[in-house]
Amino acid sequence: MSNTTETIFSKIIRKEIPANIVYEDDLALAFTDVNPQAPVHILVIPKKPIVSLATADPEDQALLGHLLLTVQKVAAQAELENGYRVVMNTGADGGQTVHHLHIHILGRRPMSWPPG
Ligand code: 5GP
Image (tube, rainbow, N blue to C red):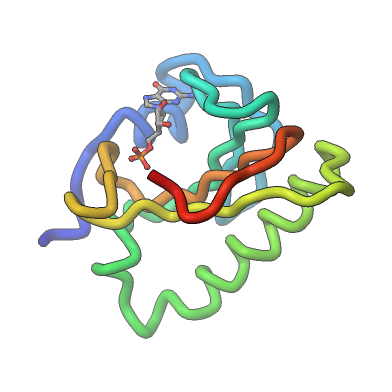
């Protein structure tokens, strides 16, 4: 799959549509999910339009590490000291609906395992 897909997240990155942005730097953006599945539900995305984890390149290694450390920072900012779940839906069977790589942070409620 091409890594150049335009999605709703591209518009959020360009500030063409509103989002509740909770963190931003040169490489990443974090904003609350419009349809939250937990009291805290934040999406962390790269500004680079990578479609999914399955299409990331070896050259994205540092960026992927940066996204995980951004998750850590955003979770601390959201005071999720009791823990949280990190989810990266990937592809059709992974339940991915927006084709711009994103990491879900879900918190402030107990999570069950395995997920449905
Ligand atoms: P996926 O199912 O692809 O892993 O997750 C996509 C997520 O993006 C969903 O949780 C959905 O609620 C969220 N989402 C879709 N469109 C928008 C939007 O326009 N704004 C925000 N803040 N979240 C969105």
